[in-house]
Length: 256
Image (cartoon, rainbow, N blue to C red; front, side, top):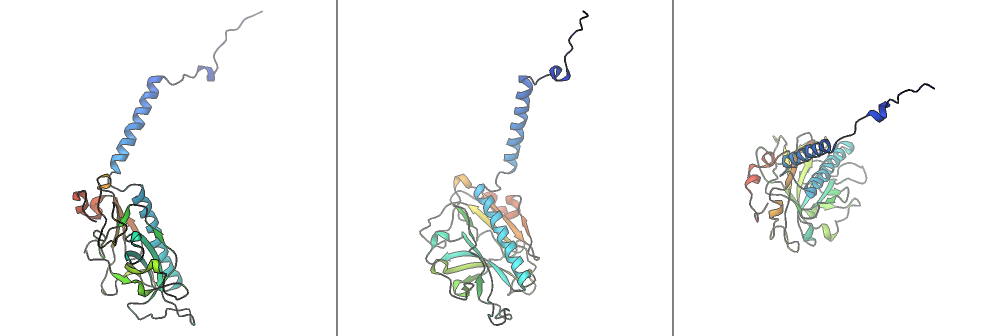
């Protein structure tokens, strides 16, 4: 009987990874992860990141409402809530101008200060995350404070006054019926407003006026946000310098 040498098949001949090779791969992955974390430093933690994404969707909802219904709309940020101080600078809602039930059209199309009807419950920013009225601007390049409106101008979709937990004063970003970001006090307004939030702490039993949020050592540069262009679209900031150069110098305990 003739004998034939046994030759290894392709599968049995394949060489396995050595321990050294596996350690090298793990080291490379660790280096890449470290580099990535350094690149994202200062661009917001989990609360800021999710907060920015949530509010971006609310601005998109407001713009879509304006274009779809051919009426003005707005994004409202709670500045001081009379009976719900813990939601100051955290509660954000979408609204549209009051509708005439008989016609289904805007009730006061020529008014610069219409009543606003809430279109949804909106959202509340994550814990220890707050809207920054210090860094948010009416014009990101030109400055200016965001306008405010009292809750007396807010109504439910049924045309009733909002419930007590919504009573207070709100910052307002407005869109016209074409979904364009507007300023009723400036006919030459070019848009480019900024919306910035930060991670910090404040006494939730007091109003944001009496107790504004302050940065903490753990979230010293924990800020995020975006620009709202004239056409209503948004662009997320990629670095603290894009938001405000002062953010890089902010110290623990300072307000934002």
